[in-house]
Image (cartoon, rainbow, N blue to C red; front, side, top):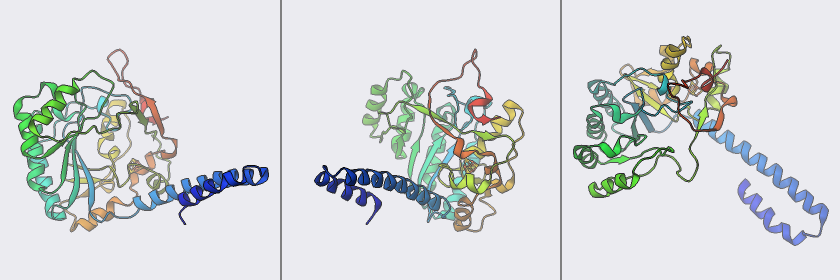
Length: 318
Ligand code: SF4
C-alpha cells in the first residue's frame, strides 16, 4: 500500500473510534509520522530522479539575450546584472543542428528565453531554426510579456507558422493580456502562462556560497534545478541555469566564483546523446557554490531600479 493510501485508510477508520481518546491520539501521531515519511520518500524520489540520466532530453532552455527590461530582484538568470548581450542566430542554429543530430530530434520541449527574448531583434529567427531542427518538439517562447502588445503582425505569423506556444510569465505589471490573447486566437497560437497565475508572483533567493565550501554532491542532490532546467549555451550543455549565467554576477560584484570546462559538456565533443544525458545527471564542481538547503522561496516580487540598484544579498550568502 502506498503512503498516501495508508493515510487515507487511517482517516476513514478514525471517525469510528472518535470516542476512544487514546486511539484518536495514536491515529493523529501516526498521521503525522506518515506525513513526515511521505515527505522523506518524496524527497528521496526527487534525489533519485536528479541522479538518473534522462531517457531522452525532457527540456532544454536557450537564453537568446542576457539582459532584461524588468530587472526582478533575485532573478535566477542574473539578468539585472547583465550587460546587453545578444546570442548570434548563426551560433544557435549550429547548436540546434548538432543537438538534433545527436538526439535524432528527440527533445520533448525547448524554451526560447532570456533575459527578455523579445529584446533580441532576431527573436523570430531562433524560433524558425528551432522548429526546423526539432519538428516534433514543443517549442515555447518564454517572455515577461511587456513587449507583446507592440509586436508587428510578422511576429504573430512567425509563431503561428512555426507552431510556437506563447508562454509569458505573469508578473504584477500592467499588460493588456486581452489584446495578447485575442492575437493568439486570431493566429491560432497556443497560449498559456508560464507560472501559476492564481498564486502571487514570488522569487527564490539562490544563496550562492562565495567561498565554495558546500559539498557538490549534496547540493546537486537537493537542487530543484539540477538535471531539470538544462541549458544549451555556446555549444555546451549545463545541468542548470545558474552556471552559464553566473558570469554576470561575477562581473557586476567583482567576484570570482570559477566556472570551468568541467561544469558543462561540449556537444561537439560528445560522442552520443547518452554521454550528454549521463553528464547532466552528475554533480559538477560549481555545485560547491550552491547552499541549496538555505534557498529562500516565496520572496516578495519587486524590481531593481536606478535609485535602488541590485544588491549582492539578493543572490549570495556572504
Ligand atoms: S550549480 Fe549545482 S547545485 Fe547549483 S543550481 Fe546548478 S546544479 Fe544546482
